[in-house]
Image 1 (tube, one colour):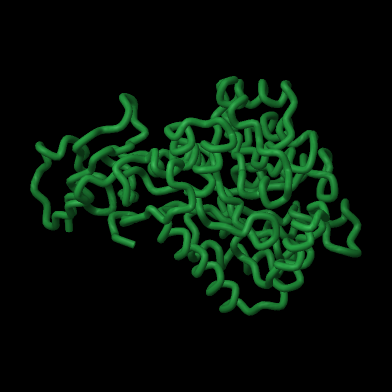
Image 2: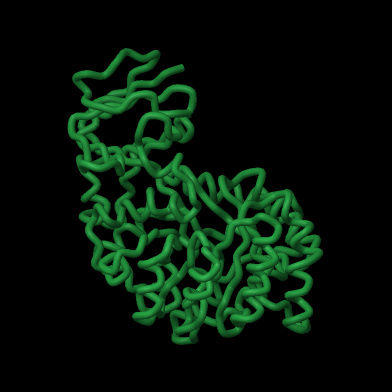
Length: 379
């Protein structure tokens, strides 16, 4: 059934030429079948008049950790009281996740995905990484693959307590990789002090690439380090966090196809400085915004919050922030079928209860999502 959405005051397409005004779109078969001026819109089986509201692509959240169980409220409270964030807090979630049933993990994942979709997120990546043994990483990947748009293997999230790091990397690159490979498209590594060093991270990336997986890197979150250079050297689709960058890191990203994914909600929650997104854009790098939704360092599924933060505190224009949360997020997943509105792309669109996207930053914290369609179906 075709659906005509008309009465759009401002339509952000992420195509050249800027937004369209007094626009309409037709959704048919899960794709955009027509985009243009409302006055010239063709007939469709169903007509929805959004009465002067703004519309834009659905958010593309390219970095989440949503296959988990348990709660880390106490850790958050301690951090707000002045304790620093450390990678080792992940172990608390690992213990809870291992103890949970498949049904509990699936229900929790789907609850968070539904929450994100209600806020306009129509394409979502999520990772393993709270199992850290063969059986639990494999079931995390299987559960994620049943619900998420994109799944990433993050066996190299943390070295489990009582395990030798190099021996664990052997497992990550061998039996564990074999077990998760049927369910995932990507592999990731947390290249950071307290997690995996450059040599260990490189081993993980080599093994994953040899299995045909795309590459991602957690890098430069807690301090300067080799993560960005490692990601660029291996042609990773993205390097995520990018909180502490050198001029050489920025230059490397600007001259590569690796997307710099910044995670402002995480920076705020961990009392880290905000990533230098403005400097990255000025240098010519592609910058994506994502939530990093996880129970420890960034427990939010709100892409709108990330957009508002990028505008109000990171120096991005509204248009730049919206692009970073849509088309650039798609680029971080090496996809061209989401994050943009044009004939033939996936019919993912959100309508705001506002006349323009500027209200996302102009009215921070206000729930502006009026309607969402994903793959042509209303959420």
